Image (spheres, rainbow over the protein chains, first blue to last red):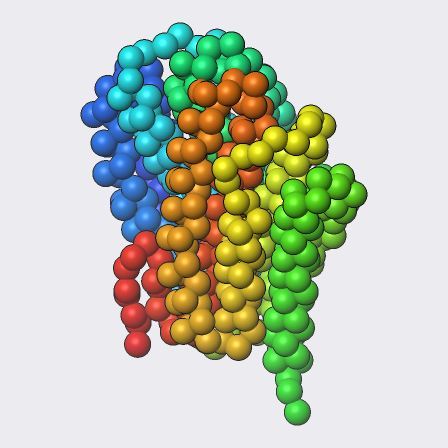
Length: 222
Length: 222
């Protein structure tokens, strides 16, 4: 039979995965809002923010309770710390989805213009990163987490390309400055979600390997 | 005589304050870079990033060691969790300072243009927020932390104003699109530093009061 502490760890994992589901949903809805220019999806993202915030608080409290319950073994301790960090990143993913939804509301308040940036494709890469990072967490697989780290560079390049083409567009057609700027900011929000997915992947590796792979270091402890 | 655990907590506090000093220095240097258009300050910010990253890792490891050392009392547990969260926020303050330095490098690669946004004033408010948040942490003063929360709205408004005037400027003078965009992004980086200062202030209150004041809730536990 599993101890109360072990049951608590299972519950913590389940809660974090549910939180991850909310964050993914927020990204998908924000992307759908952009694609369809339908404010309904923006409203869904905005309305969903408080559920994400509540989930973050619950997870923090359960982690605290578990740490207070007994002196955890090193591997459990690392797991709880990873959960705390992933939790904070997921909440910020939710914030970024809200920012995107607000930009989309501004975008659709004006007539549609064609801009040379493929936001849905970028969103797709970013969404995949978040999914994979959560999958790595679910299965405790460092290899899957490492694949997420590889993808970050691709999203970074997409963001840099978006910057260049949109600045050019604004210079040549000042009338589209505002929508172009909204799209530029959306590309930056997406890139920040990719950063959070990267953080999550690093935390999974930290938990699984007892290593700290952040900032390019590889300080394996075992 | 203080126990090894208590000494560890003191060391943790000291390390976090030193990390805070590095983050503040990065903001000040990035602001100085903007003010003087001297790339030397940008280089200092870029070169300082790895020291901040190292400090973050050290603090995480010490926290982990302390949690593993004994079953901490509730107040110590809250303190260590607050340190872990503040640590992550300070590292991200450093990242934002790097982003600002990169924008300034782009800005000074072109002739100076006058833009109707007072970045140094905004940076001043933001820097004060970070200072106060760290002061609140040093002294364990929830009132000081609460004053930081009040300041966040002011910085938010500055960012929104910057957006409006800079979009207008870009529309009227397409030739200044690129520098105007750089300044707009700097204003957003500053606003994000203010968000991190707000997070830090909330973590101090969480530690001191055992309350969770995030997301507007006031779920006092005692």
